[in-house]
Amino acid sequence: MSGRRRFVPALLRKVVSAISARDLRRAPNILVAGLAKTGTTILFSRIEASLPTTPRTFFEPRTASQLEAILSSNDDVPTLTKMLVGHVTADDGQVARFSHVVLTVRDPRDQIISELLYEFFKFQQAGDSAGFDQARSLLERKVDLPGSMSVRDLYSEIYSAVGGPEPEKSPFRRLRDKYTSLARFRAAFEPLVVRYEDIVDDRLRGLATYLLLPEIRAAEVDESVRRVARSKGYGEWRQWLTPEDLAELDLEFGPLLREFGYLPEPASTHQSIPRATSLGYVDQFRPLTRRRDSPDAASDEEAAHPGERS
Image (tube, rainbow, N blue to C red):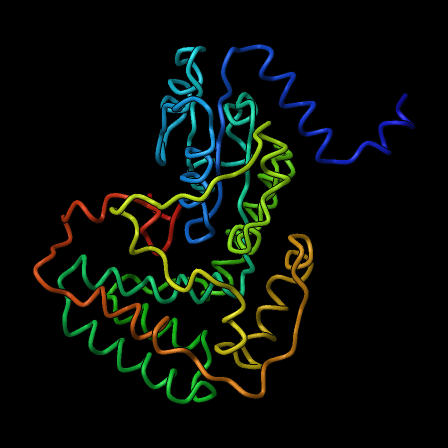
């Protein structure tokens, strides 16, 4: 019997496991987890649109008691929860009680660019026009001359302009720590892994099979978080990262890059950073009258460093 099990495709084993979990309750509990900027919100919206019964939805619960309340809700109604890895970890036993667990991952080379550009939202939160202009000038220099500054140095300069405490780790080291948490989560709960690139390309048949659905329908995210979206594409890192950046990324990530299905590549020799997805994107965060206590600051999906708050 154990010998035959090796020949059962991994997805089929996940489906069988999910069916067994569903037998214990009349409606599924679905958890979508991942880092911010990895497609968790659009996937959450698309799953919600695809379920035959309108689910109870929960957006970024933070505590074990909140998870417990979700899991203890009425068995007759499905639940759909979106949560950030960092708030939920490999040590949270409640995760194993969800009938379906989906983990989103993204090429860390694209992830670092998205996180860098989302730093500009902090200027809007703080109403810091001078800091925004300083950081935007640095970004414009990088856009005009991609090889003039490494992403690591640009990120550090913008982080400093934001006015936060001096980080103990480089941006690549901080990102490596987040992906290490993803790897631990994956090992602990064996979720169905959905890559951001497959969301963009609408390659979600495996997800539909896992959730016992005929298809994953198209959907729009809620307007309150729509500004999180930037390029809705992937691979733009090739226009940004210098040979020095890629050398440090390879040093920091090593096997982690390959573990999630991404392969190392040399730096591009012909770089051209699109202005629309760089300067055009951050211009929406130019401070107007918003203050740090604005309600727009509430969601960690909109935070530049999810899971790092005390």
